[in-house]
Image 1 (cartoon, helix red, strand yellow):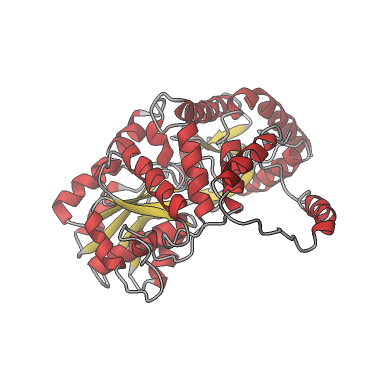
Image 2 (image 1 turned 30 degrees about the vertical axis):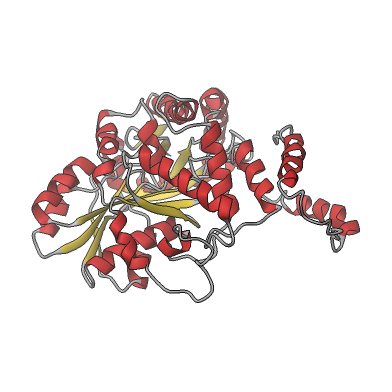
Length: 451
């Protein structure tokens, strides 16, 4: 089940790496505790049994996707040097690889000129984007939808920036009328548009938000940590396609290669359309940045030490699977989207379930039909547990009942939220595994209903 064949390629790559340092005198490598490594690794493997099978297609719960073998190998290869991409002194080759890999991400959004770098993940990337927004307009409000990731409110608190949420429509997207009403009240610094919400994968109407920017003069930050790569997919609905087609008009974008980009955690990326924003990062250091007159990545990043191995892994993956429409990488995204549509159609045609709305990306939310919303929430938990006993791992989410209102039928609406089942079908293999996933869900539901 765990891919292991690629490991033999690592020794060959290590030997090739070693030839680059052949002029060095032998250093008589001594590994402390070498005789006990096998025992410790065996114990480590045993401890790691206490995990859900995140790598397997029957895991369809949270946003977890195994790295591509080339990413694992490239990351491991770099660890023999362990570069630090803060300054060129600590990561010459890996810093250049980061610049090239980030440039490919920016080009995916239509930016040939940009400012950007890798970071620990979406939280740090969003923090940098909102920090820049605060530098441009201190003490001015940040807006995001009620379904935006909670990190935006938390980050705004850290940055001492006012933060407000905007209501969502019944599709989990930012409500344009509510946004316009708020914009009419007083000046807003930044509107966060989420292209792929964490709970439902909903895509905010970016094109229309851009139209409002022309009138109200605010910055637009796109949180595409989860959904950003779907700009390459050719099988999205018309509204999601329209939003992704306009992503290059935003002021800043965040994307997480450690989600759909096939990378190990943590690998996020923040991008700015205007390179001149690098002035906010300017600082002096008495002990770095002197080995080269070229740009050191620490000069355009809030983080200092950052793993060069993450950049090496991303560079290698994008060399193998270029970020291009209709390419092999894009086909994997399209397979995930197709799997979500397949599951959605099966659920829609099964009277035992209540669906919310057609998925815009590859996340499906649904609930068991019951006498009331409260009863449905309890039954969802039973199905969750029954499915896990059959090695089908889903997730639970608590969402506004309005997302399901059009399909509740005779169910009593006795509470404002519904605890539903959530499936993230982000592995390309999910498309071919969908019949087996459906069978396990069918059996788990039958058991839960019978009990």
